[in-house]
Length: 269
Image 1 (cartoon, rainbow, N blue to C red):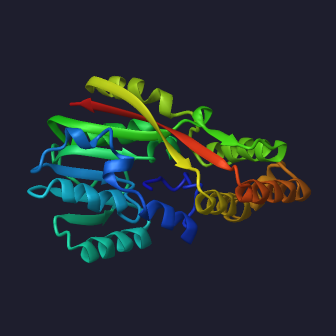
Image 2 (image 1 turned 120 degrees about the horizontal axis):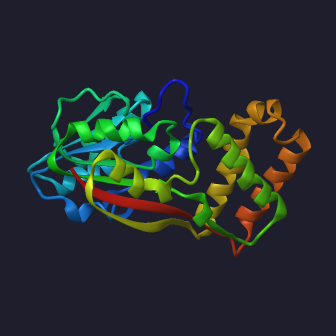
């Protein structure tokens, strides 16, 4: 994730997070963007994490090149190893911030920012940098969450309380949990044309995924933000324990299901 010092990637870098990020791939998680690629394009993948999308994008542009950027070096190393293991050579990884990209004007034919901008306090500043490094006629793709489109089952009062608490944490860290719906406006104001929006969902609907999902949020997420939550008096220790128990119970339920809405948009310079 490409963030300024005053911003925090609220998901953190626990192994559970990195495992989930590593499972991402272009044809599924960037399906809205892939049809606009051609084999010789030079592509930038922003907030690339451990490189799941990056290396699979590279396989789609065999005569081109893909550059993945992130500010967390451990993830960049994971991306390099993934590319080496797959034998993909037309990809590279660099430490860089979306607010100050280390590339010349008009370097890339296409840029992708997947699940990045909704974590940023200044998304327009980032999009202006993406505009700068795009060639005239280049395509941009954004994919971001919008929490009003999330659904889960079975319902539970303490799990509902957790979702609201999670939003407060993310927004305190500089993010916008309803950013997805604003993508078209952002690109239009930045000067992009022929803007088209869509939406899809990331779904968790197997015992493995719902258990892992609840284990992350009930354990890792709440624990890493516990000091902040208590300091801001958003919840008490007993309320946090109730939420953790409810998340564990939900994740183990045979009917458990969760899906996160991802809004998507493409535009051209």
